[in-house]
Length: 247
Image (cartoon, rainbow, N blue to C red; front, side, top):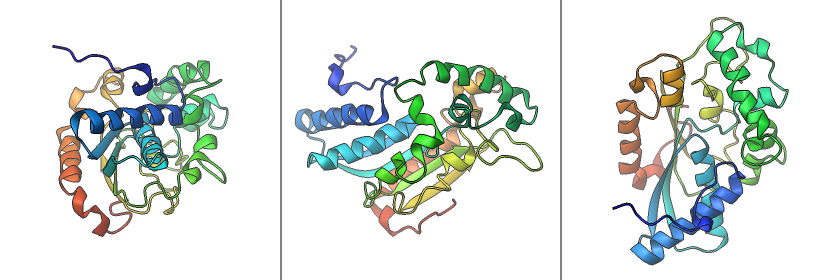
């Protein structure tokens, strides 16, 4: 029997803003507390879900919620933005694909979809200009994850030899490795992080487009699922782990 769909204010609209999605997720987590008696959660977010989870953690703290986040696991999350959004924003040229057919196809296809929704919502907020730099969204989150150990899981299926733009290469088909591992995100924002990298694509969809088996996607690779399970099981001791472990 399918569960009743939660009301709009507890449902994430992925075309809306990151912070609005976080507020809705926070309301759902509060509902879990009041209706199910849950007071501690481990949040696992794929892609934008990692950003939504961060926004929810902040929203929970702001309202003094009894729900505590024990850990955050972010899979293929664009902490520093997606190069496709940056292409749509005019800051990453098609030439940075270096003639790679998959990269050019994504920029000419997926990036156009992002551009079509670039006026507002989370598509606009996928750019490095929004997320990074002085006064950027990441900096605004400083302190939110002070007591939350974070596991970053990234894919680097697509690579190019020689001199490349690190904002593009290597990547998982949508998010660059540098972004998924939050290499340039300050420790004030991510004070306790552990990183894992797999030779995977961003999602089942990207693997399908690239004519690769489903288990080459971060969302289907058993190794990724094992890393997620290990992160949840070890969450209680996450505060003792060294920062940027494997990053």
